[in-house]
Amino acid sequence: MNICRMNYKINRFVSFFRCDIPQLLKNLWLFRSQLWWYRWFDYDGMLAFMQKCCEGMAIKTEKYGNRSIISRSKKIARAIK
Image 1 (cartoon, rainbow, N blue to C red):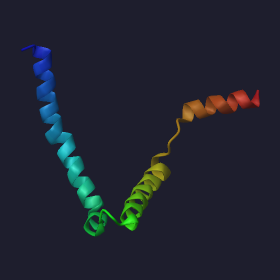
Image 2 (cartoon, one colour):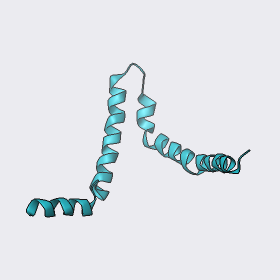
Image 3 (spheres, one colour):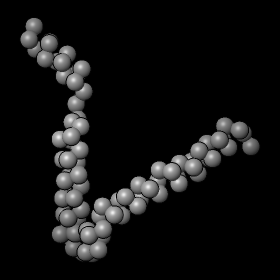
Image 4 (cartoon, helix red, strand yellow):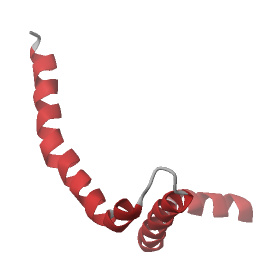
């Protein structure tokens, strides 16, 4: 077996336990209420998931923003000239 391929498999295995499982647990905790009341035939369940996602995105966007300051400055400088 190729060493690079083996390293890839080891990295995937380690990444699964270091990243994927903790993210799964965070998502389960975040959406626990929506998961509890979700039914496959219920349109409100999907809307509850979307609302929770949008609330989280709004908080992170307000805190960190979604634009690069440098590229925005370049656009403003071009507009002024």
